[in-house]
Image (tube, rainbow, N blue to C red; front, side, top):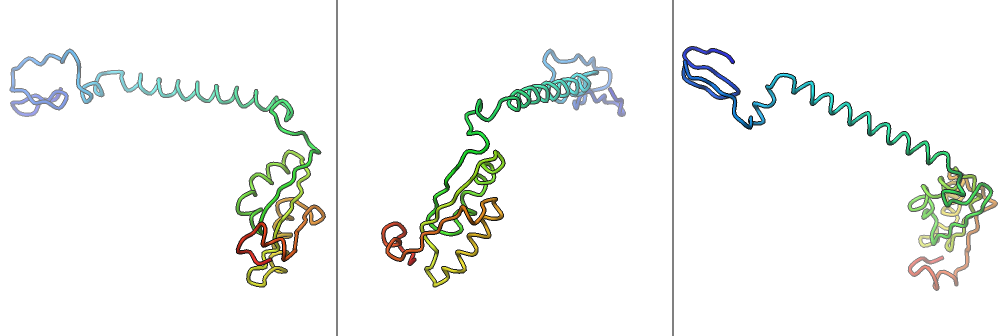
Length: 162
């Protein structure tokens, strides 16, 4: 409590001098903040929650790491995966995280592209870009097949003049 002139200030309320101040049965949020030791209790609770959360996550992660890929439902190393795309650049725009994840698991990834991307007569450029992109993603050129048939584009890739 602070004494200011003839009034006393207690938990944000002013009372005339000489008035007896009783703490309320249910202190306000402001008053609770000023109760002795409450800051320490709040800090200890926050630390306890943080430690328990960290421990739970650590135990859960270590249990997951102990599982083999087969136990986790993933194909083992050396398995093969085929990625089928309609156009060059689809491998990077839509499937890069998947391809990188498969490569990290030791899978051999193959790619089949149903178009050379020749809409603006840029088919050869798009083919080179596709091969370079696949190389960055870990798919060697020997595992990339591009179907470059003009008749095929009318069946699968409307608007893509391949």
